[in-house]
Structure formats: C-alpha cells, structure tokens
Image 1 (cartoon, rainbow, N blue to C red):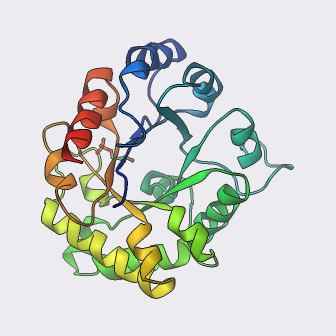
Image 2 (cartoon, rainbow, N blue to C red):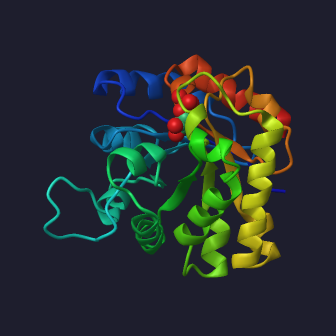
Image 3 (cartoon, protein in one colour):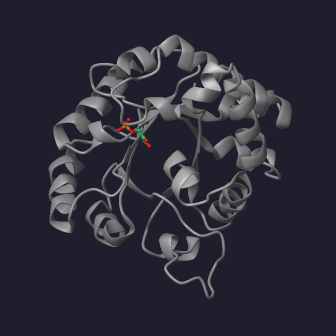
Length: 254
Ligand SMILES: O=C(CO)COP(=O)(O)O
C-alpha cells in the first residue's frame, strides 16, 4: 500500500503574518503521518519560520523550487543545502508555471531531482500536458518523456522515493479539474513508464499525485482511483479549513 501524500502549493501567495497564522491554525490538527503525509510548500521567505513552527508536529514543509548547484555565483537563487539547513523536507520541481515562465527544462528538472536527493530533500516532480497537446492526442507521449528525462540516472532505491505530480496544465487554477478516470489513466501510464525505466517494484512504490483544481468536494473521486496517491493543491490549500478538509477526506478514504 502506498501512503497518500497531500501537498499545498501556495505559489506566490500570503504575507509572513498570514503564513504563520495558517500554520498555527492547522498544525495540531494534521492527521498522523501513518495515514497521510501532509506538506505545505511555501514561498522561500517563510520556510525557516514555518519549519521552526512545525517541529514536532505532523506537518512537513516544502519549497516550490531550488537551484541544482550547492553554492556559487547564482544571484537570487536558493540551494538544496540552504533548504535542508533550515529544516525543509520537500521541494516541488518542474512545476508547469516554472517550465512556462522561468525556462525550466527536463534537463534542469533532472539535475534538481539528483541535487534534492543528494541533500536529503524529497522531490515532488511535476509533469503535465497543455490543452493543445491533449487535443492532439499526445498526452502520454508528453508526460512519458517528462518522466523519463526527469528521473534519468536515478538508482532504483531513490526512484522509489520520488513523488510525481501529474498536473494537466489546462486544469490548473481554472476550476476545471480533469475527469478522475482520465487522470487515473495518465497516472497509470506514468507508472508503466517508471516500470520500464526501473522495475515493477519501483513502479508500485512511487507515489503519484493529481493536481489541477482539486477541492475538498472532489478529492474523494481522485483518491478512489487505483493509480492516484494524493494531490498537489493550489487554490484550495490557501485556507486552513479547506486544507484540513482535504487531509481529512484522504485520511478517511485510507
Ligand atoms: O498548480 C497547482 C498545484 O501545483 C494546482 O493549482 P490549483 O489547485 O489552484 O488548480
């Protein structure tokens, strides 16, 4: 059995005071990590505070990006060592917004995945197709190539620990989520690709989240599918009540 994982992706939202208030409101109501892994991926500026506030709680903190180098002349960038040093556990890599607006490529995703593992961070690797690609029938080809290139060169042991987030780009922030059956099929295909790249055991171990307009009232449909192990949630993760409802729905499903 794969343990579900729910991650909030706050993107570029909240002030420090709002971030602290959110965490204070939810931190003692997070379900046991035996049932579900619960993560908040916050803007870099808030990570240290949130990581201190959540020590000894069931809530883990993640970043939304990082550089692949350990240190150096990379003005404005943040390294995996710096993230780990302040108690960050997860890092989102290759979100479609970074691929589209900040020149993230499958090659930089791959470097970042290796760098994350080298420094004790769990990568949440995002993949997904555009509406045009979906309509052209190339979803599996696009997503399969992103997975193959993104995970290239990992050992089986590390590959098992990767979290994949399948986020169809047309479903992000649009209120128009994918049909759960369609999303499950793509997640099943991702598992097939991982089976070929590594082996069956890895394919069965990797956790695959769905992302794109997930809300408390539709998360149950996704979690009921065999290949979907959690969700990466934007808008519906910004309010404490809504975030806790997502976790509660998953806990009950499991
Ligand atoms: O991009 C997303 C999470 O990474 C999804 O965002 P929404 O949940 O707001 O659609």
